[in-house]
Length: 193
Image (cartoon, rainbow, N blue to C red; front, side, top):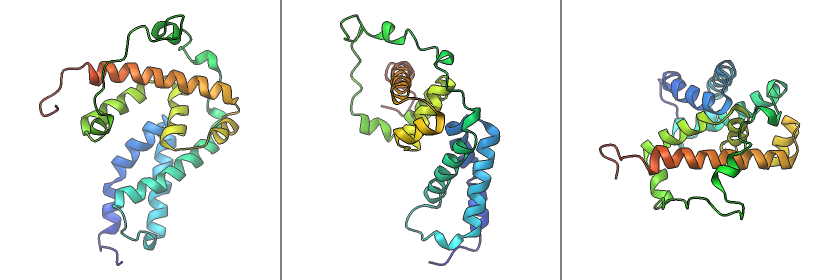
């Protein structure tokens, strides 16, 4: 496949999208900028690697995911791994009765696959992820969006698997509550059904 003559301009035009994605993942503007810059340099150094089997944006995000993992590895010492900064200690008590059942049954969320296809839903999801406490958000991103294995996350952040699963559990509970309030219980904006 021959590359379009404006390949570098097309790549540079995607910088804001990549930066938003990186900031959401890393929660550190400087690290995000570094990862995006490294992504663009890698793409421009080897443009022949883009074979056209996917959209340019998809290809760049694939490269960016690797650069994000590299950033996390380089900066893992700066990441706080103490559970004391996690203010979700009483979240289980708020959501679950002593017998382990939900205090309030979750609302019917309809067909999740349909909701995932909606751009508005993704905006609400991103906002909910951004609201997660720093460590929970970071771990959730590493596990669910960067698709890192649990042992790799534990090794990189020097935490136990139990601690990882507790923080991921709390992150998912918070996301559930945020999505419930921000999407499923919210009045639909025009055009959303």
